[in-house]
Length: 103
Image (cartoon, rainbow, N blue to C red; front, side, top):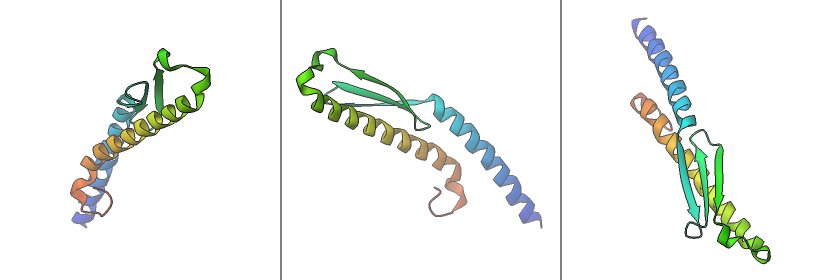
């Protein structure tokens, strides 16, 4: 019974840690650029897009398709980087549990 109580306390502590880390991740950002920095996307650690910057020199109406591709690549890279950052931070909490897929 003592082991069960210890496990319950560990689970409650881990839940608080995960909530804290998730709140911290929402305030952290990562940036990814495409086209040599022509398009930059910034994502938050909670997986949301924080912003997009486009170098005004590349805004050419006849090259909208290329710009759309660069924006897509930058956003995709930023969101992947945010997901990787979140997994790393949350993995620190679950690493000691020995449960496959959680750390």
